[in-house]
Length: 555
Image (cartoon, rainbow, N blue to C red; front, top):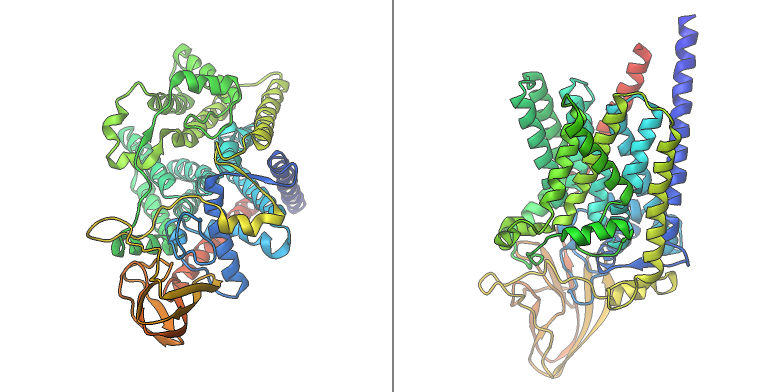
């Protein structure tokens, strides 16, 4: 009898999970529709920057090779062939957008499918966090909807096309779920935290710093409240080890490039937020690419209501700490503070304080779910109304931006299937991460070759470029490619290996004649490290599935 009950429970749990995933898949598809109406994508400069690297990855895999860390096949027109974009921006999560290219001929449709997959993973991640906070199904879905459909997330996805930040946003709930579960001595906590932090390492360095700051602050609070134990500390250390294994490939690439090469870093500045403009963005449902990205009026109202409730409450509860943390981060965004004093410090790498919205959104949603989890709720239609309003505002705002926020004045272009390759080849974006001279700290790059030499590009691959060079006499020829210190490049002239006269750009002295000259980045892949990262991800997922199945069997 007990066996039959258990089997029926396990079967119903599996059906419930399947229905949840199918509903999330439907919502993930709905979330993409307004950004692709008219069969085009409204692409920002950030979009072209990342799509260039995704196309490099696609071309490499298509040829049967692992991707290079350097962009040879595609790079922004105001950058240079060979720029190290894939080394600075880890590419493993980018497979979400690359793999559909193998199955779908239309690159715009493939891009839309990639967004559907990313949205699904974001909601699955949010589900893990919400199930950590509560067992009420309707409340779990409330948290998922808020996390997926808030305005800030859609701005990141479609207006800014900040792919690195959007990937990291998808894994942040796993980090929060992990630290909470570790504090509650749940055995799965270290695996969720390790997976979440490892995937953020593979996604976006700045968000990694935010996540590390969050974990550190959370554990400091745990320590001061005398809840820290050796068991919890050991779990945190295990999670750190798992995160390092998951992100090992990306870490080694990034560290080795920074250690060996000097290059142009992004401009340092701090865009602070004007409180009045910030408030207007909420009221007007403004989802433009500005420095004061809002997270939507419904979340702001929840934030205000919960903040008032904190000060009216006779007893301070856990949800109150989360909403106060969200309030503190919100106030920190404003131009009330002398942020200009930090414009030349390490903090200026953030560039936009509005990036902190990802943490603010998390704090508001966790506070909201914990608040409702601790009290009976009557009239759940009100929750459905809030969910509908959140979805309606983000979807309509995205559609408005998609249709109207276009043109050279706002640096947004229509990206269409018929011109996809041409636009990725010729469109400007950013010139960051080009190598610089170690003495002058400037880009050492000559664009002109001597008059007695003619140079024509004949072929590009994912990690090489080939030219036909004709000279009428002895000539010093500058190849339009950038190279980095301590990277193993093969420079071939008519099949023979030669050395460059310059460190950051191939410069060759050629006698009169006709030459086939090629430049290839030879040692730009670490297959063993890549295998370790992928196997670590697989190991964690298998352990989590096994633990979930085992716990249900025991119960």
